[in-house]
Image (cartoon, rainbow, N blue to C red; front, side, top):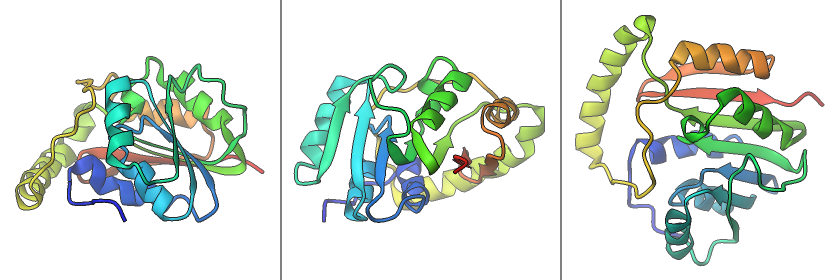
Length: 198
């Protein structure tokens, strides 16, 4: 097993994304960053392809997990020549807000899933007016958990603030992905999941 001592809020939600896949699934990790999710998926017996547009962070991921059976790809998921419907599961943690057009990105990720395949996203959004009460409570929870867990600082690029509010992500995703599931998570993220019709 690889080292799993580091913790931050992104790594915290890797477990949720990993449960979206099962052993033997061909999985695409979009915006893999330092590779923690890809490594977890590989440990679960998945066939893992991990893509990231940032060459230095991808090199660090390769170096961090040299023994994991992961195919590391330097590229942009929107333009990389993956065949349509080539993954049983597509997952992404804290990456969607880096992409220039959320609707286009969601359509692309959906295109890459097989019939009956699953898409799982943990993402960031800005607060709209209706989001502030939960966000204030979330901030308190984050303050406590970060101090208890001792947050590890990742090496990936940061985009802040996110371009869309929670409400906008909910509306856009509902338009692009009919019957998707969307909900706020307590530690400052949202969960979006979708199954491609068989």
